[in-house]
Image 1 (spheres, rainbow, N blue to C red):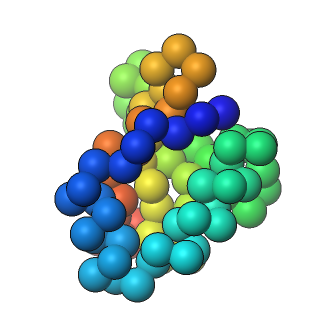
Image 2: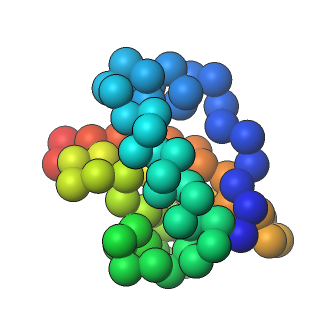
Length: 81
């Protein structure tokens, strides 16, 4: 599955939190297999909104939507806040 280009604000967030390399690694895995066990991909509540997330590392997650055959990352956040 392809991922749409990242919003510049999200790129800044990755840089600020030193997550760029981890993010790139996880995106490569996602593109080959969105359900790979290391991603911990899940649908968020309420499920009818069809918003998903995958793990960047133990603390951070990428929140995304799926449009046809492309994923669009709409947020990157601290999973525990």
